[in-house]
Amino acid sequence: MSIITFANQKGGVAKTTSAVNVAHGAALRGYKTLLIDLDSQGNVADSLGLPEGSDLYRWLVDDEEYFQNCSMPSGRDRLDVIRSSKKTEKLKEILSSRNFRERILSIGLTDYEEIYDLVIFDCPPSVDIFQVAALVASDYLVVPTKLDQFAVKGVIEIIRSLDAVMRGTECHCKLAGILPTFFDRVTTESHQQLENLVAEYGNLVWPPIPVDNTCRVANRKGKTLFEMQTPSKAGLAYAEIIDRIVR
Ligand SMILES: Nc1ncnc2c1ncn2[C@@H]1O[C@H](COP(=O)(O)OP(=O)(O)O)[C@@H](O)[C@H]1O
Ligand SMILES: [Mg+2]
Figure (cartoon, protein in one colour):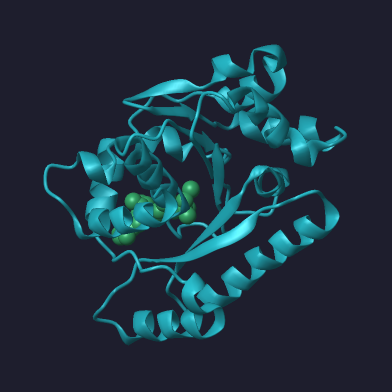
């Protein structure tokens, strides 16, 4: 089982879009995949057209002995999800007084080891207990980033968090790639910021995902890019990213 975290402390950089489409793309290629929403906004369920729910709370608080019952089918073959909701804020409070809280996700996942080939965490836009716990549980980190003037700074911040987590705990997570999103090939800003990222991180910078309104339309419809009637630029770009993740 491989475990991948999509994280960046900034909101609106396409963390959820990337996590959802990579998860569905991997499932379409035959990988039994579990997508876990760690953000109290619960956007994963919306993006997949699923009803709201607080499976994360149930998984980590209510149902400790029955971890496996907390993932639900997404209605797509080989893709299950653990949804999040406002209740996740309460969960953070509960966890704040627990020992080994940064290991809660890695401990929880041991029950799923035999079931899934791939686990994907979609993180909240903040450095909180879930981002730390996701890094501790993960093999790889992917950092989606918008190509604006703060892009490089945001990436540096998340890489610092990873370094701090690695120093303080038993964490084997590696930076797999930086995923530039909202790439607009007609603006010089996009090209400039992409160049800056490449200058800083070399071939850790993955091919960019173009800005594409299909992402918003798909999101509103509760569909992934691979369920839209016509292939989209962003869908094709994500397919290339999935090649790097599942070979
Ligand atoms: N490549 C893209 N082109 C245009 N819109 C996008 C793209 N990727 C994501 N979006 C839209 O941007 C918004 C924020 O994306 P989201 O994945 O929710 O970001 P985050 O999880 O980092 O907060 C959503 O409405 C989403 O549909
Ligand atoms: Mg999100």
